[in-house]
Image 1 (cartoon, rainbow, N blue to C red):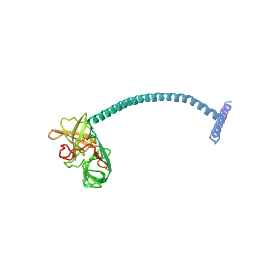
Image 2 (cartoon, one colour; image 1 turned 180 degrees about the horizontal axis):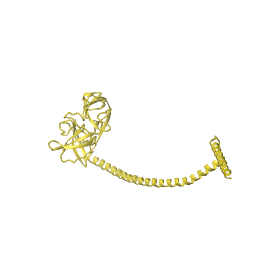
Image 3 (cartoon, rainbow, N blue to C red; image 1 turned 30 degrees about the vertical axis):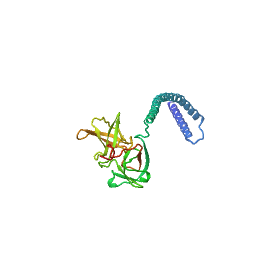
Image 4 (cartoon, rainbow, N blue to C red; image 1 turned 135 degrees about the vertical axis):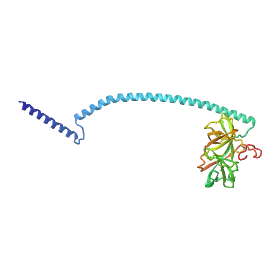
Length: 292
């Protein structure tokens, strides 16, 4: 009797294994469609997954939408404040322009220190042995170029016209160490601080902003521009930013060191600036650029 039940269990086990192997073989065979039990199982799992995923996606989308709405609201408030500031500045600018025009008309002023015209030119030569002193351009007297006109790139001032021929000119760079090569300039920190750009500091490679009042308040990062008081350059041409400053050896004035706004190492094209305001004669102008 026990052997019968034992053999019966063995037979049932063998039958189950055979059925299992058959099902595995059937499921692995290449078929164009699933059997109905497989379809039922797949669809059932899909319904369950859909039932969980839809609420999860809805909740995630809801919280993302709330977060996006909050960000949009904050950005909108910032933009509104900027628009209000812009509108106020626009009104102020319009009013200042109107007042300026009225003042000019009342004083019969037809020009100011900021007026200038621009002529573009190409750099055609640069001597290796005088790399930091002079460059040549392809415009000359026939093109309206004159000595001492300011020369700059789109970034900032680089020098002035030194010599002019009919069809080309030589430009003296700000980095030239000639003692007569100086530019009247100022740094504005509420009140303008005047001085002169005089050559380059050989150790640091920065331009030297000299003869600054010892009591003047300077700050690193201040922009230095042409003053227009030298009788040659217009006012407001960018020169560079103050990197650091120190008193001179006698403690009577300060010298600031300027990182040039223009890249003196790569000069391909330049702008020659013709000052619009009338210039004083160099022999009666005590602050003329290019002189003692």
